[in-house]
Length: 115
Length: 116
Image 1 (spheres, rainbow over the protein chains, first blue to last red):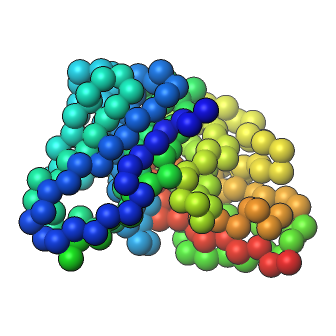
Image 2 (image 1 turned 90 degrees about the vertical axis):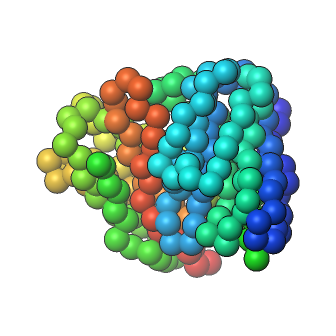
């Protein structure tokens, strides 16, 4: 039972390079999320997808794009990486869209450094 | 906008003793949910406990319990009989109960060290 799988676990980019962070869940969840975590900060929502075919901006969407490829997969793309995007990125999924019964399942994170 | 404040960047506790982590939040809503998440060195976020705002009874999960004070907007986490495996970052989080609200608002976290 893999849960939420993120790749890669670590990545170093140069300013201006692009890359895509991959996320897949095997729990048949409808909702998927991308968060970033910076030192001394809690997690902040970048984008989310309430269901296959839909995506919406979260708190800090600038500089990112997402694709909900199918129900299982939700990717995060950095078109032109900047040092300010150095962070740990977490993908999460949940069955319910809102409410108490929603339990978020997180991946193990991607440590991204932009030089 | 809602905010979540964890005023203790770091805490330490002796193994087998009890520790309380503080969390306060600011909201104008009357119905919402509160959560504590644990993030061990493996980085994966794990749900520890959750509380519905309309329930006065404090949530309990084995050695973990909360002290929910709605009027004071306080939601502290008590860990009893602390174990070495409890060492982690702990995040308090808030979520609106209103439909369509997708965002969990997290505090900045408290690093808990458990001393043997």
